[in-house]
Image 1: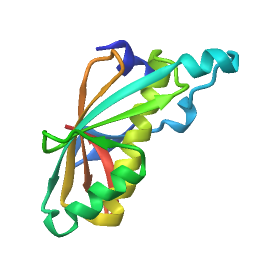
Image 2 (image 1 turned 180 degrees about the horizontal axis):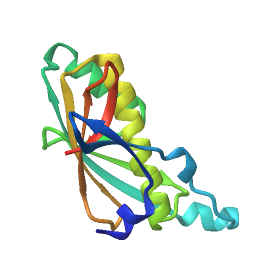
Image 3 (image 1 turned 60 degrees about the horizontal axis):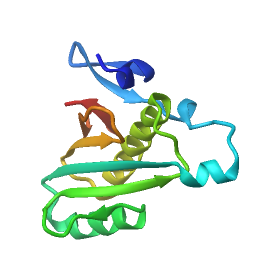
Image 4 (image 1 turned 180 degrees about the vertical axis):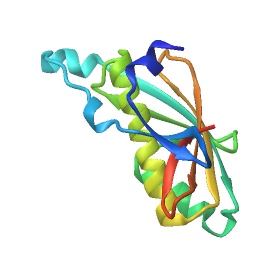
Length: 147
């Protein structure tokens, strides 16, 4: 198990009799550190995200516009790969975990708005191992689950 996974706290939910589903609670992990403004300006956390929308064709363009509004930038020559910079965020495990939670929250909110069957995604945060998740509606609301 990676250090990133160990740094995260998961709220385990029963999904059809198993412990496979979970929601990341990142609010407790919002990055907090005491550095000067000059040091914060030099910090930058880079994230790459690839995602697949299931049964979302009528809303796909609006979904992509929504991601752009959130600060994601789509790679032009690749269908579903996005990148985003988080200025001022350090690259430590706790901050990466919080950023993973932020991504899950953003995609869950987008799923509630655009109502795809599910969003499957893989994210690479900084220099940490990539991870795969899925956002789907299991209990009358969308949530993030382990892929």
